[in-house]
Length: 440
Image (cartoon, rainbow, N blue to C red; front, side, top):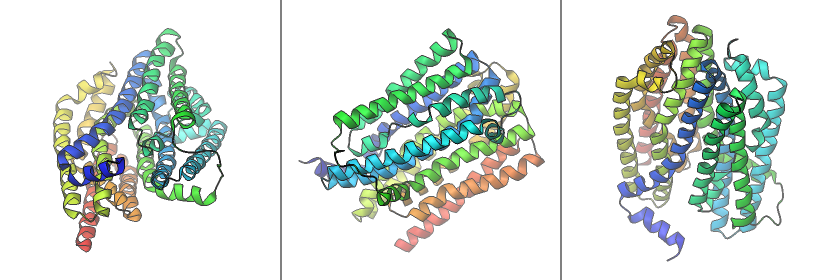
């Protein structure tokens, strides 16, 4: 039996709970280890350098998230083209799409690095850096910008070839290198926050090197007749836009929160959110894994006009997500301070952050609706509706963050995000239900 026939039978006949969980576990591993690296990185910086240093890293984080969003947009767009061309046995066309994606990303990354280096201090102040954390942020940002061009290994394109294990390794090996070098650079060589940035760049370079090895030695794509093509680049960008909107939306929300905290609370607020954001990112991993796992199942069965399995996948994804959300709310309410004490021994930061975590955890039950609605619309080819999902959350967050912290400095930022998630979930549910009724 050919791999294509096996995939079709799997999508059509495998019981949905087993199929969804199996797909989710593979995705979860990659996302989990990425989140685990972020937690380890936070521990090294927090205890090895200090709370202000962690605040400096935190204000740079939205930039790194945005750069990751650009990489995911270009890589995801190219992966869609590559998988289709490989299905047509067009190996040169697949190689051409990959080469065009690389040209796009490296050109954008180099331009961003130059602009960032020229305007470091104004950018960092815009990101929310206070006077206390600005030196740390500047040192970290400089190294990150210098290594920016290596910040993706295009694992999504590797997955498009069906090389799931190698795509997972391209996450795991660099992550292990990063954690090891964090210890060496911060604790042994005493390089401080610069050492943390160097460890991150070395992680990127190792991922980049592994991808070069893959495309030169193990890929089925052909790169003999590569040509830069505007039409191919435009298609890459168009297909990847929903991914960019979703990921950059999180980046912009983080930036807005840092700015509001810096302006209304000061360094204490920025430092507390530096640790909170890592816990939040870790908590969101199961939601993201389930949403990403459901995408191919939804897309395949929608194309096969099997509405029963489409609806079953949606129900199961939402059910599993909500069960986890309820557990997450309970654990956060009970152990918020203990979670923060893992990263810092500053009781003031722990107390302030715990208050914020308990408010923010109220948004967990609403996050799955936003994520799954966006995933469903992207899977069935509804690009505008897929873009609506992250956009409505971003717009609502921006409006509330601009207003509420001025009325309540200590809790305004957290309440803003909670309200935005509640209303965004309601808006997505309305659009989702209206679309399903129209399709019936």
